[in-house]
Length: 240
Image (cartoon, rainbow, N blue to C red; front, side, top):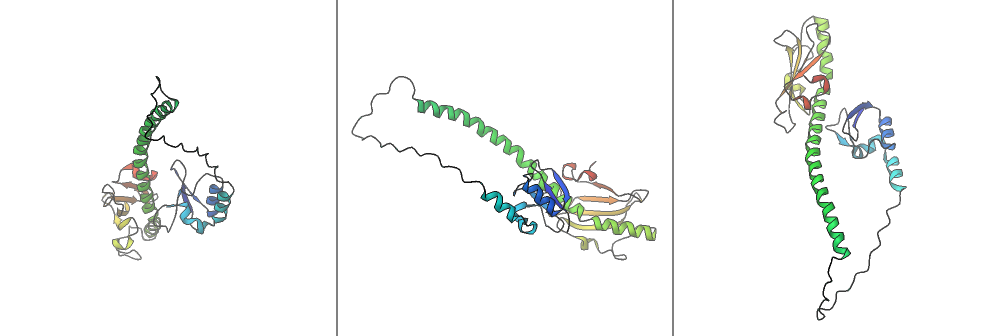
């Protein structure tokens, strides 16, 4: 079975791991049901709970969710009856009651917390969006691995770079996948051999329509990755 990839609590990507190892990570609390996982064949990263059936995690989920008793409900103070409207309220004494002091203290504590929560949300949301886009780009790059093998094998056997429509290579549009709209195979202007991926379906104008290139270099021995997409959305071996 294809290897699994997962994102830990710090949103760092790990993998590939086997399904059994992924289950072990869940049982030891390294990942949760909300943790994002992916394997080849999935259209996008999914929460662990969405693939629990495939991984056989329902027994572990039932065990972890059934052992702890529910929290004890807090005691409810009996409601005081409101005084009749016909009886005037007694005059207030000088000073402040303990209830008002507690309300003020609570307000002073809550207001900064609301501000901090807003700041954290403003930081976390863009970071999560960048993480999601980076995961999609990684999926697009992973989908091109077999094409790299075919291009290099052709170059070794024929001594030249293949082109779309030649031998077993299809048209550019035939290589469309979830996040790739086309793949153009051939020799680049600098004489290196490789192919160009056009990215799409990201819902982001900074990535949709942009190009990512794989080339074998001048020695035709090692693949090199480059792109016009910003580095923050690219895998490490495509940056710079």
